[in-house]
Each structure stands twice: as structure tokens, then as C-alpha cells.
Length: 214
Image (tube, rainbow, N blue to C red; front, side, top):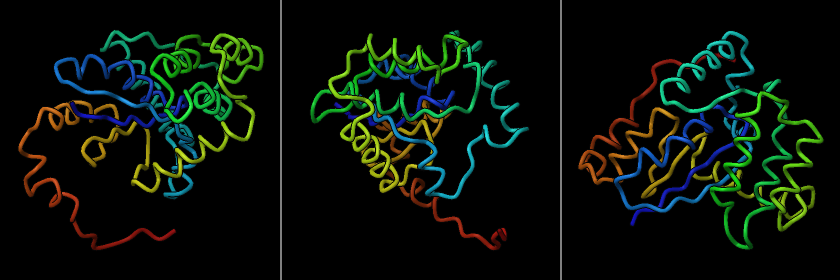
């Protein structure tokens, strides 16, 4: 049985759609999945990138694309009233719900993602967050040091592994990024020989002849 690690941040609409699609994409393979919420902004800061919602025309395109993708895949999607928003309380809540020494389960991640992407309401509304916290009954205090440290450690670990965005999936030490990488992940899990041949490594060795000045 293969193991898949799924890195996500509830602020990402692509992470939400990938989360919803994952069971269907992998329904013919034997896998177990661990879900690791991370701070997307921490990844962006480390790699010197901007999120799509931080660039006005890209934000407009992203949400048009998300609306179309949700329709194509028959996934309910009602974006939050404001985006981007600060996802830290929700991410810490995810880790506060995790059993000791384990990652948050799919049910907890689903509740958090649905809170953001199925209501059309403000994801960071204090009363909604309080109601969600009560419903999830976390093991730890989401505002406490332990929950904060678990999120920080997960983000640091993701960066150390080369994760630069969400959603990212890891299987057999290989990283796959984005909603559109799910078919590629599926083929890798099924044992497609391409992934064990020279093409995987060769594709990553393309040299640059110029660099953009800051």
C-alpha cells in the first residue's frame, strides 16, 4: 500500500477542490493519506513568491477558473465573503484536533474546508470560528503554544522537503503540485514506468540562460 502526504492550506481554493477530488482520483488504488495543514504564506515567504490572490488580475482569473472547475467536477463551491483572509486560526484549529503524535484526520480537514468554501460567509468571522471550534471539540487549545508549534513544524518540514505551494502531494519521495497534477499522481501510484526511468530527473535539469532582476 502506498502512502500519500497531502499538504494544504484552507485559504487555497485549489487545495479545496483537490481535497474533494482526491477520493475519486484514487478510488482504484490502495493508498492511505495523511493530511498536513501548512501556512501557505510561510511557503511563499520562504521561496520569495506571491499568492494568486495578491495579484489583482490573477485573482480575478483564479476565481473564474475555480468557479468553472467546480462546475465541471460537480463540487459545491461558494467562496468566502472576503479573500484572502488570515487562515492561521483555522490551521491551528486543524492541528489542535489531531490525535497526539498524528496528523489531522480527513473529517476535521473537511469541516474546515467546508467552513471556508461552502458558506459564502466570512471565513474569519469570530462567531463562526467559535461555533466551528465547539463542533470540532479539539484536543488542544487552538490558540495555545502546542497547536501553534505543530503548525509551524509542519510548515518548516514542508519547506525542507521542497514544497512551494498547495496543494502538494508526496508519494515515494516525489512531489506533485496542484489540482491538475492529480492524474500524474495517480499514474505514479499505479507504477507507471516513466517515473522510475530517466525522464523524471532529466526534466528537472533544464538550465537557465538568464535571470530576472529584482
